[in-house]
Image (cartoon, rainbow over all chains, first blue to last red; front, side):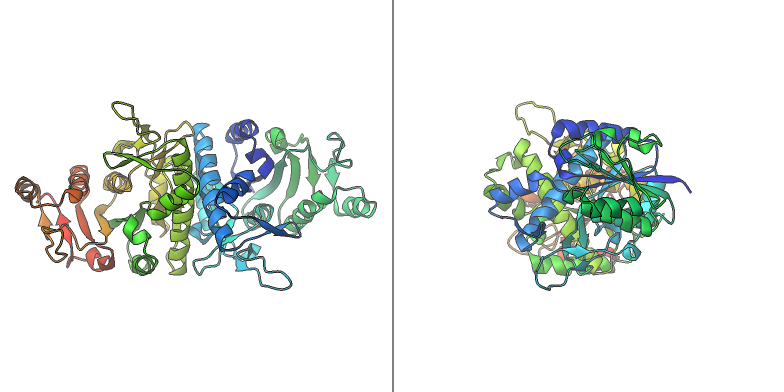
Length: 264
Length: 264
């Protein structure tokens, strides 16, 4: 099977114009099928504050009320997404910006209300992803750029975590491609010591993961990323790489600088 | 050649949730290749006001400064575009939202500064349009939904008049399709008497146009639309129809209710 890179870029890089410029220039040089998935960033909060929309969080998750879903539809789906597309075009990379509503690529279920009402948040399943448009774009040499938005099929846009979107897209496309899912952020990988950016764990297998987790050797903020990674691998993704955004090119090779997550 | 409808929907319909819902339900039932182009609407001005961005106009044209291009990228490319896509999906119409940056469909020239600096405004040419992605989407049964945004190829998003975008897309696709370009708005067509919505001019040819213009029988606000229409026809568009948004289905037939603009 041919290779495909599903590349997730997080908020801290989006918020740093210089780092972002350099990252996108690198992405444009990757001469292989690829999809870019982006998160939010501080700009959504800033514009929300200006509009009098204050973000509420429960358990680290944003509550997406009616005003907030309008805000993120504008900022994620419009401002950030189209600026990324225009920058990639300037580097000669033919990109197309998408959300889960476009081409009905990612229908979602509005999260049901239990103890907490998360509002307009969408939960997604790998088998609900419609890959035909993505496959057609990739075969045309186009790089899809995906905003963290889905829809419920009844005209409602929903907010979905970008790490989850990357993982679900990677899994859905793994029947057609050998997928390396790459989480790019502002650290060198999964760190044993959060204060030492050189303490990268080069390889995490399920066994290593459970040993390190039990021994408290992993930074809490990393756990959801690693859980997402194993979930993706169980659904067919070949391997998951967690690394610094500035190492993106090196991390498309076998000589990686970061953390490789694999089952074996 | 097969038929293609390029449908432009204006701000007044976008601002009326009930009219828009009904219009999109109708568009979804059109069982032929189609592209929807949308304008702005009051929501951009409202959100701009809340953000302290006041629109300046010269000669009826918005001056697009740095804050305004961010605003319209958010509102046109994100909020309006993705809500239209999600609504069309809810009616079973597989839509994909696009700007001129996506797939490099519509590269533009930033308007040069003469007497007036219009700011980040893009002028477009038919022969610069890259139709391959649009053709591929249409062949997949997908309806492109186009926001009035272009780009300069150097990472700058530009603001481009939606009527112009519709006209240029229609012309560019007329080598592959017999295109009917349809301007849908809140009046029944080109009116002889602006106060009488039944005074529709059913047919405008170049001869009729010059006669009516000379005699002062056409409402000034209609002239740019008619000029755009003739420009499109000169560039290969089969015919242009100006009519009420609520007559969209009837106006895809030969039994039109509105104004047909044609060379013969």
